[in-house]
Length: 258
Image (cartoon, rainbow, N blue to C red):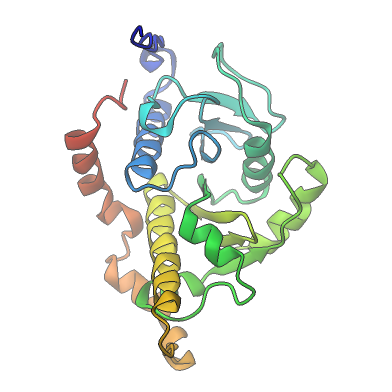
């Protein structure tokens, strides 16, 4: 059998601003990290980032590429109408466009939107009680968590108002029977939020599988979660961990910054 032909993608580095290029590099890194952590669903979820200096343009994955092969130059630039703004040969998943464009249109602070179909995340999203206060990780998620009911594959534009209303001003959204979604002021923030969200779901599934009586965190402790989160990250959010994550990626799967 012949080896698959190597992807040939023209560099975008000299065709975009330095600010956009940096966002492209970070977003490509984020895709590869999501794959490395085992949260990807082949090609069927999305991470988007707003193009710097714009309110209606964002970058999304080329539909058909695996997350661990996405590069800064392969990302597709689209507007809120789903129109491609460059000469990318790749298509865009319409379901991804529906969810992400809805959030980018109203949450101007959400420069990055990250959505996954992780197995543990979907498992908890199918539970009536949703995320339970069972771990330190869950405490941070519950401080800023919304829920959105399942309406089928996200192809219907009529769902957008309900989706953004359920997210509100929160950083985490559990899509019932579907998966997890996080937003952040930076790509690093959205990734850290998802890391904690997915960890909380994994811990919950394992705790429930253990069969013993569960011990919820007291409400009084939960109420101080947002303040404690800022203390833990020294108010730097995801940027505290991001350089280390990039070093990890450079060791395991370099090439995203091309």
